[in-house]
Image 1 (spheres, rainbow, N blue to C red):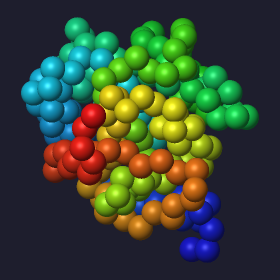
Image 2: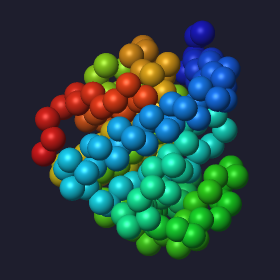
Image 3: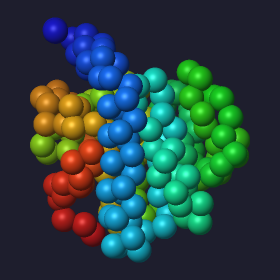
Length: 185
């Protein structure tokens, strides 16, 4: 694979090939790890995302904690890439993604931000879909917001090309649990 686009296509095909039943089981395990992590630290304001295609499904975690404040991204601008954040209800937005009907926060008012990706390396760098939304957000987030790359273990510990505009997450979460990469603020 010579280009990032080819690498992304390879990573997406690799994730798509994971059995649906396994992805569901792993998503449930991740929800359990997330529950324990948040309860231990008394975190109740979480930035999450609705699944797209074969992505990890965070809906079990959201459903298990209706009393927590869950914030979801909405595409506010593609040039420059910018997300806005809001709570449910969700509606179809850009690229068929479910997004909050009302998103009024450009920085999510959360304690923990769950960050999607196609692959994550051991330093917390990720490769996403290539639009730059999360790198732009990570560059502006206050240090006290814990950023966690979330995905299946098959997506972890992979080589990720790093560009100057890329920003790492502070921890990784998979069906095997949390792995802290940098000290929490």
